[in-house]
Length: 158
Image (tube, rainbow, N blue to C red; front, side, top):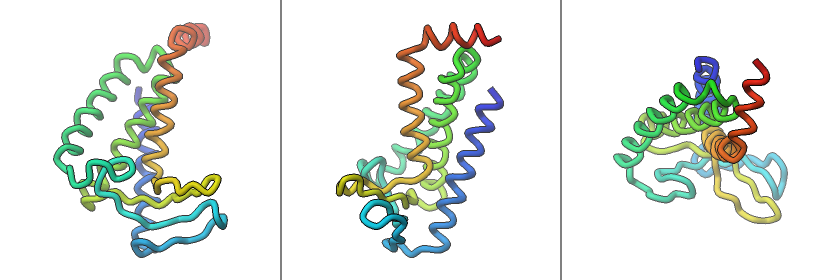
């Protein structure tokens, strides 16, 4: 369990460091071209959830995040030793939830900066915590879909 909490802490640190670099070195709205017509670093602030949904609902995010973090730690403690993929998903979800929670508590908004235009589509701007949340959900789905196989494989590795 401690390994996965350590991984989550490391990812929160990376998330917060990248956001701090953006806040210190870019003005809001400033864009830096990384790959023309595809990838930019764009300093943006989000007061809502994904794609700006529920903007200004600070109290809602505060309570939901506290409940989610407590639930994730509980599930990591109860189920994490049985299935390593599940434990990784919890670690990713924790880091994403905590990373964006820190932003909301400290700044009142979330710092976003990765801006992609895949195939010309203007994809919503996101951050490291959002990447962790996305991959955490994907990994959790894999874990749930293949739980029996993964737990058998995990016990065979011991």
